[in-house]
Image 1 (cartoon, helix red, strand yellow):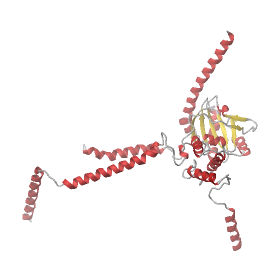
Image 2 (spheres, chains in turn yellow, orange; image 1 turned 135 degrees about the horizontal axis):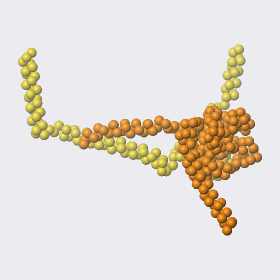
Image 3 (tube, chains in turn blue, brown; image 1 turned 90 degrees about the vertical axis):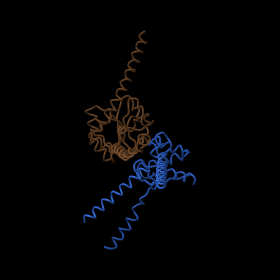
Image 4 (tube, chains in turn blue, brown; image 1 turned 30 degrees about the vertical axis):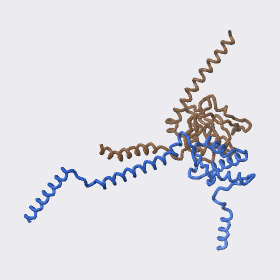
Length: 164
Length: 198
């Protein structure tokens, strides 16, 4: 009984393939193989959107890998291959979207937000410093009024003490 | 004047409210259609029923139509299938099938069993046309106008709501364009007739 169980486990380990994407592609040289890896690393799977096509085992990712390989064998440049994908799947397909009319916000927004943050901090900092320097400064009129109020308060508390 | 600054948080919250409200009906996994308002890419693929007959992009011209990407491995395709039949039979919509990365026998069986809403079905075994169109999952339904220009893509099941609210108005738009085309064709033919008679 036990041995059967052991064989079953062994069998399942042997039979079940690795869970990540493996295709067998041949490349004429090491450089092309590296380009293939870089490209599949930077192209995004349209179906499972938080994976690149190198990581994903979705059928569409397999197709795109096959296509990248085919285009590389055709002798296309990296830019041509990325353009090929963008023509079909839009800017979304590339993890480093190109600068264009409607991706410009992706590139500019972080910079703008940092600038806004820095300027807010600077304005607040300056205001605090100014407040510390002459924050206590009261006009003569204010001083007079403060004195009056304090006297009144004294007066009232004296009265209270008298009563008790 | 200083007090106005107190309204800034309110304005920010209102802006976020409207932004999020707009995002509610928006599916973030839906991809933009890269080929919008561009012609159907060139292809030459066999028919599903008749492997000898090859179809090309020219077969997707002449009439506004829906190109429906489907496969027997796709459960949502089965869900939308009865409605596609209804569109074809009751509303007379021109439907073309693109059988995507499928098995020919299984696909034919499917059409025989469930009914065939398509004028013709193109058999794209390797997903070549699918890739050129930017298909990333089935079902997808493309609105192609009379000149073979891709106007819109719907990702997911086509049902009555989608048809009434999205696809039907687009088909109508393509239809008016088509009638204009027809008008010019009529003029051309009458012109040539006149030329012949004179």
